[in-house]
Structure formats: structure tokens, C-alpha cells
Length: 310
Ligand code: ADP
Image (cartoon, rainbow, N blue to C red):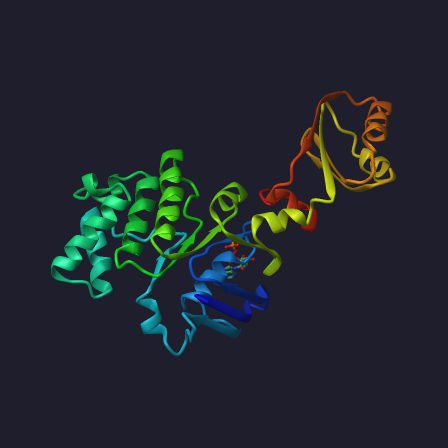
């Protein structure tokens, strides 16, 4: 195991941010930590790397207790924090060099690895530029270059694609895949389920400080595969439709999202006709009807009754 967390608890002013979490991450995995804002993802990441003092629990990295072996373990970890951490008054190259030196790289080895990190993130041509001239996406890529210059075995990325342009986003997602193919284990946190679905070999879904489901994306989708999801767009929705539809056999959940009704039913029961009849009876005009394949968003919705992204 690259990482093992046992019974991790963290409170802020008495409020539980992480509620007795257990996690195991195997070597070579791209491990996705998925959950809405406030779920506790960053608190877990900060606990793993010693930035947050935990209330109780054990964190083992590379089979060693983190607290007792912090310095040794940190040499093999690269962290891309949620808030960009680069020096505005150093050039891109100087920034990466600074981080390389922190990890005790020197001489020709330092030069080579700095060049490799900048090339890898597509910033070698921009190495003399100061980050204040960079776009958000380029700064994020510089942050990644700083985090991987020492070629860590474990790379932790906390929401690395929030607020950046599509081109940088694509670049970052691709970089994660390449770093993993070269042998690094990656922990990737996000509230974008499409990213986690595309990238991650194992996914843990969190909500309110707790793990609510984990597994491969296939196994997570199996959790909702005995369900049928129907999405009906309407010109207007009367709230009392929820109670009417819930009385129909097989209907498990009715959710109103703007102009859309989402109806989750038991797959075995054919109730589409009855659902539509009841909607028409209430004089609501149907614009379109879709039957959806399960996504991680559906898994979250089914388990919590809420959307992943508000
Ligand atoms: P996520 O990364 O999933 O968005 P966080 O770990 O940032 O979630 O937050 C989990 C919970 O802990 C939230 O309720 C948040 O408000 C709270 N929290 C996080 N950091 C602090 C802090 N430094 N002080 C007080 N509360 C915090």
C-alpha cells in the first residue's frame, strides 16, 4: 500500500470535518477523491501531508507511520495544493529550481530535472517569464512543475482544474495520465465527476466528512444499476407533482432541478406510461424525455438525495 488511513477524525471548533475515515491506496493507482465543496477532501489531503493536525487516527505512507517518519516520507511526495503556491517575483524556471533545491537536487541533476518538469508542463518556452504574466491555467501548470521536479512516487493534486481554461485543463488531465504511466501513484481530488470518471482507477465518494461509497467506477455504477432514471423537461413544474409521482409503483425518488423532473425508479417495474399520464393530467407541458445511463453523479444523487454540484 502507498497510503493507509485508519479512523481519521478532524474537527474544526468542535465541528466534524472528517468523520472516522478509512482509506487504502494501492501502488500505481490514480485514486479519485470525489465530493461536493465542504465534503472534507482538502482536510484529508492536508492531514496526509502533515499540514493539518489530526484529532485522532493513523496515517501510514509507504508502509510507515507518517508522524514518525515525516521528513523521509516527504522526499517522495509531490503536492499540488488547491491554492496556487508560486513566487511571483521569481521566473518560472527560478520557481521550479527553488522547489528542486528544497528537495536537495543540485548541479547537473537539478538543471536536467528542472528542464524536464518545465517541458512536461509545456512551460519550457516560457521559463523566463514571471508568473504574474501567466494565466490561471499556466500558473497551475507551473505549480505542477514545482511539485514533480523531484520525481516523487506519490503525487497529490487538490482540485487542480478549478477555474482554469479548457486547454490547460486538458493538459493537466493528460499529465496525470502520463505521470501515472511512468510509475507514480496519484491522489486526485475533485468535485467534477466527469474528470474523476475519466481519470481514476479507484474512486472514493465523500459527503459531510464521511465516505459514502468507494470502488472502481464500474462497481460504483452497479450500486444504481437496478434503477432506471428518467429525465423529463417541462415548460413549468408544479411542486405537488413530487407527491403524486412518489405514489406510483416502483418510483423511488423524484427530484426537481430547474425545469427538469428526475424520476428514479426500480428498473423491474414498467411505470413510464403512468408517470407521463400523471404529468399530463396536471396540465404540465412535456418538452423532452430522456432515459439516462448511470453516472457517478447519479450514484451521489441516489446515495444522498442531492446533486454533487450545486
Ligand atoms: P472540501 O475540500 O471537500 O471542499 P474541506 O476539507 O475544505 O472540504 O472542508 C470540510 C469542512 O471543514 C467544511 O465544513 C469546512 O467549512 C470546514 N473547514 C475546512 N477548513 C477549515 C478551517 N481552517 N477552519 C474551520 N473550518 C474549516
